[in-house]
Amino acid sequence: MSKRLAIAAAAAAALFAAPAALAMPVDGITGPTFIANAVCPSGKVIVYVTQNVRNSSDQGVLGNVWAIANYQRILTVIQETPNTFCATTMYRNGSFTTFAGPSPGGTGVVSEGVQGPISSAYRTTTFFGVLQPYPLEPVSGSFTTDYQCDSQGNCPGLVDWTTFYFASTLGFTANYWSYGYITSSHGNWLQNPARGYGDITG
Image (tube, rainbow, N blue to C red; front, side, top):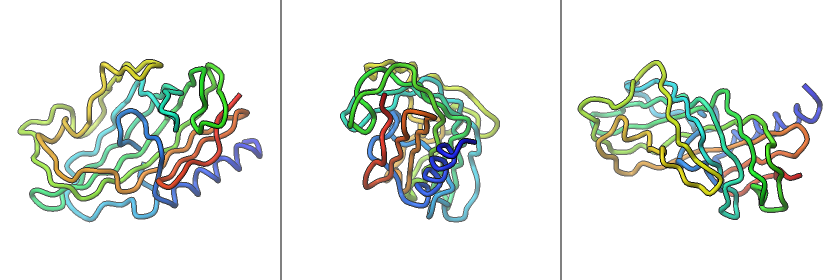
């Protein structure tokens, strides 16, 4: 690993020690669990599954779609009481490819086809939920979802993962989350709830 990539990786690791981000991927709440306070309260694990997400779009601070992402989302759902739940996710083998246009941090422009890995994590609040009588996707193993997003943010295949397992939810939101996008020569874009760090340009 080059010194630059080692520094970027260390910065991404440090990011996960804080709550997370300004501009989330298109599905709104996504991402991994080794950040401070990211562990759900104890309870019964009712979902532990890998969702292979294809063609998700990432929006920058200016509202533009700056990249398409593919990743494996490791999804864990904990049942705390009969009607309360908590969830965590973790990205694995995530990568992004840029579109030409405004950079994610809004400080310049980025060219077409810049690629790099994604690191991400999130934990939800404890929320109320009504379980689906029969889950619409597996609760273990893996499955694939293609969001079919394009550069304009059209995503005909977009679906909220909670609908796979819950008929309804109340109070569901991301409590802690963070994103890191790393490149070898175009900079890095790291996010937490308060602000973004760096940018990807050139």
